[in-house]
Amino acid sequence: MNTRYALIRGQRPSSSAQAALQRKPRWHEMAIQGFLFFCGALSILTTAGIVLILGRESWLFFRSPEVSLREFLGTTKWQPSIGQFGIWPLVNATMMTTFFALLVALPLGLCTAIYLSEYASERVRSSLKPVLELLAGIPTVVYGYFALTFVTPLLRGILGRDVVEIYNTASAGIVIGILILPLITSMAEDALNAVPRSLREASYALGATRLETAATIVLPAATSGVAAAIILAISRAVGETMIVAIAAGAGPAFTFNPFKAAETMTGHIVRISGGDLSYDSMDYNSLFAIGLVLFLITFALNIVSRWFVQRFREVYE
Image (cartoon, rainbow, N blue to C red; front, side, top):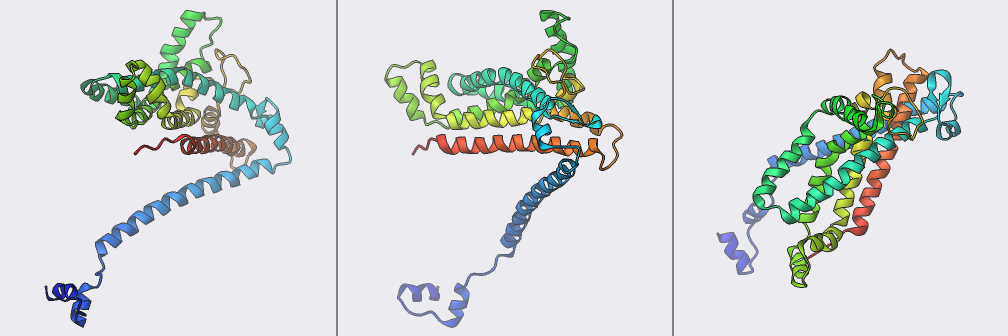
């Protein structure tokens, strides 16, 4: 108290009072801060280590005299064991499954997000959203057998057994769309809810209906968040493994027919790595080259997502 009164009167406190005013070390806070720094540094170092190993093993593949970057990016046959190194059959199958996944998840996810944000009552929202998020907790191997035993027979019954093969990219893509549906719905609904209520009220005051308000006011205002949700969902679809390994087919095939079997990048990695591979063989090193291509695709998608969010972000006060 004497120190406080001395400061109020403008007097210089005594040496003992100055020592009392000095900042005391808080060891528990320093320990927590150090632990958090360690966790952050560990995650960064782990990511760097993964990229380093991926790049090193991929370099072993590309430095082989049998492999040329021109053939890798310019041909359409992939059989490393016999000297064919065209990556496009795997990339094409991956893009086809991703396309069908978006064809399912994008309209359903956006419509569901708009309903939860603009139409549903609080009671309905609190009940429906957890049910949708349960889809994200189902093991992907279950989704794979669901595609193989339900979606494929359904497509064959509708389009004909001579049109739809047992293993095909269409059924795998449809089920991947179901898988990423909760991701698009949840993130898009959060972005729509972040739009200020005043914009909606202003639209209603001008005579707009709820649908017009949602489509012309709320959705454009939440463009950055919705786009980020879509791009992250694309990354999730590109990296999906078990569904395509079970339902899409085994064996690279460069085809644009979604009802024929074709192997994706992740499906090929699973199939080849499950066999007897010798270390430093051509097939072994090719897995890392495929993984590098997959990493570059998802990395580019994340860069586009960050740019899109920064470019079209709306800031309200």
